[in-house]
Length: 445
Image (cartoon, rainbow, N blue to C red):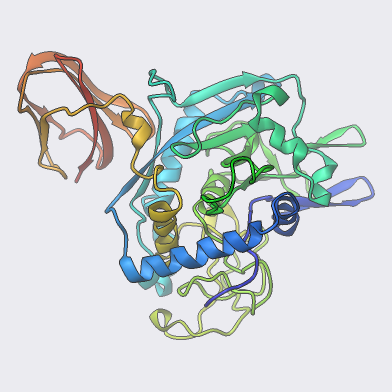
């Protein structure tokens, strides 16, 4: 299923059409967003397609360079009103949900139709709120900036002009500038609503920048879209108290499970929409996702089979995969990435975002620690041994930044009883008596 269509920049998840005094939003303004960057940087669309094709071929020919990837995340909350200043608990919830979605650990993962079981799996890509900033100082991975702008949204986005929204990525323009985009996934959470006849109307849920793979271009050549993900504040986290209005005008609200972020991070790591932003002939370029004539519309219609295709792993022709995170189905029925999609994302991390997936900023101040951690993965006991000197402090974090174990001591060997720890991945930070530090990823079975 090769695709030579222009890849998404996606995300502009929600373009709208005006009907009298209503706004009906549609979930992606991909052509406008790509054209915006293409006008600024001719050749942008071609480079995005090249990245996609090379990442796909890399995954087929070479597999993956690492068994797992840790992506440091900084969440920039840019707010005008108190309700937009999301509580830490909402941010931690979103990071947790992002990790569950990317690794098939969500509570609803079992709702996948059995037909698709042969083509799905965990990505072994995890996301951790950074605890070291660009300057090597401790951080919780969250920045908060109050802006005098009531919204970053505008009607210009309808015409493919993202200048107003992109202000959120600039301290000088009312937002906050990104941390090093080679080493951190920057996520901006803000208000992108539009003002329609005096009423604030949600018109855009989020967008992301796929890797463009232009390392040989002169500095400043790729202007315009600053690398990262932007999310409407009502769509962040499954415990967000701010309701998201249903676009059908019914006065009801959509269920939010944090999967707008999952979808946009998929785009950030190179994925296209599963319908390829076109009809049955506009494929997404992934061999194990069924073709679809178009996106779902906030529903969970499992009767659709809108295109005829042949996927051997699925027994030939297969129905539309509404469970896929890269569709526009209801968040309540999305629960999977396919192995082909995972191959593309890891191919992107290996080749086009190489400084991102190794958790580098999590250990900016690391030096050789001369410590051994075993077994890893572990079950009940985790042993930490200093080959030289002694250990002064041990901190164990969940991937969403929650500290589950912290002790200070002066010992060369320590055993941690982890019987009460939940299964999953953790980040272990070690500080030795000589002040050297190190971070390691460990996994509880």
